[in-house]
Length: 249
Image (tube, rainbow, N blue to C red; front, top):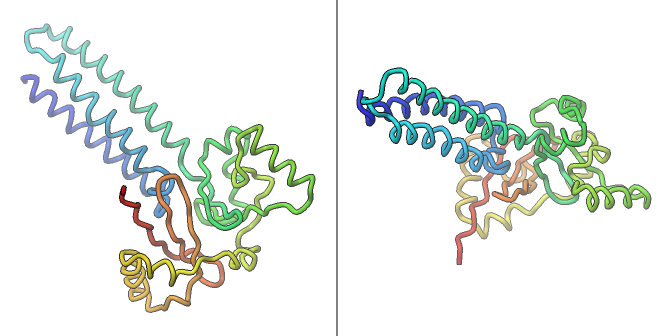
């Protein structure tokens, strides 16, 4: 086997491993629509760089049939160890950033990464008390009491915990949905300014045999995308529309 074939074999093996990572990422750690909003794509690019490029490239560089079998096997073991270590780091990073809660605070939903809660000593499984779905939908109620407001501000300033990361504010979204509904966005105004979103929404309505007024609409905001979540009037999340990224001017 020459170095090209060795590198290609390594690449095909890496593709198999990468496919498993993609499956876990999309179906377990970042279910739709949180793959885009929660940074799943950004994390996937990290894993791709490590798994699909690093290992095969190193094999291409060091593989030499003139080396003794012992030396060659030793080199490949070192490469495998480096690749596994880098891959483990990448996957762990993604795992820690997976959305474990989708929290409504003031006027929009926001995802909460696992790392933010585990650093506070919060047991992720305890979030099931707020919602049966995964990740759970939660309502972060802004306090009215002055002391509680000061505590919220203190945690934000001193511990870099934004309100939607503060578990003491968490309430059941289902039980507070009437309050949340008052913050829904005007979807007609949004789709009037965006034909692509209008087209996506019309497809959803056609497939479900429903109308625009059958749903409540709320923004899910992140540093990567804004997504419009569609709820029934009873507070059940049923679908979503991705807001296109703005093109650079």
